[in-house]
Length: 400
Image (cartoon, rainbow, N blue to C red; front, side, top):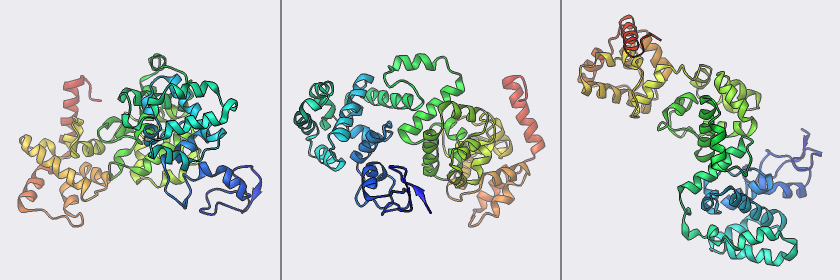
């Protein structure tokens, strides 16, 4: 199949020797693009280092989102946007203009010679080098001092991440944190919510159960494990392909699934758990009670919606000890038995909780557990729903 060369655009049937992801018309074109392609190649031929990620960032003119790279190369030791931009400019000149290879930069850092070797490169370049960059490099040796761990403070790291997110959504790379906050104050709650999620995706990959609102509304709750690695990759790819406004609009209108498909991510999106699409197709303010139950059962410090107590048997518990016992049992169902959440919800709505659970493969219950679960899971949805409505009336003055 004829494709376009990734580097020059010429038609070619040749691909990378290590994989078929990228098309190249010649070895020279592959060599020119290698600093970027090495990160995604199936057979890069050696271990990928943070210097490789730094080089790819510089050459592609993207903002680095790899925290380890930010730490290794001093970005966590500067907080002022001007210094961040100066640091990027120095690395750009070292890698793109002076032609220093990532392996060499990695060696300098490991041997704790990064600053001195970069100084030597500038001296060797003479008048061809930017004197502004050289002056900044000479007067900021502490930025490259690995002994200072992650630098001045967590605030510096947060400032870098803030600027990364801000530039990702189209903001000025020279904006101060105060200027960014002033703009954010004019946004709607939903837009600020999406911005916070962007920050999570860029800084750590996404939401965990410790951030329940994001964990629920963006579908991380549909995964068996807390890392949800495929979903983290999906959201990272999505924010590279869509504008921030597109993302916010899709979130508000419950059309993130459609946005993913339009941006060429349907295959990756289809590989998510079956419950993922149904959850994201509902309003962010209409999260099914089963996900509230899962969050509560996993031990997160939340106050679940009254519906969780109503239809899942908690209203039949006689004291706090029984509530905790039932909560722990549901936690076991989710973690060890991988019970399909929507099937469990259907069983609850049909007053068939215990019969459903008793038929699960490998389910073994002691006599005392059977007695306890039979009693508390003997639900009647008409009563449960009336109880739920009464709870809503007592707290809000209206049923919904």
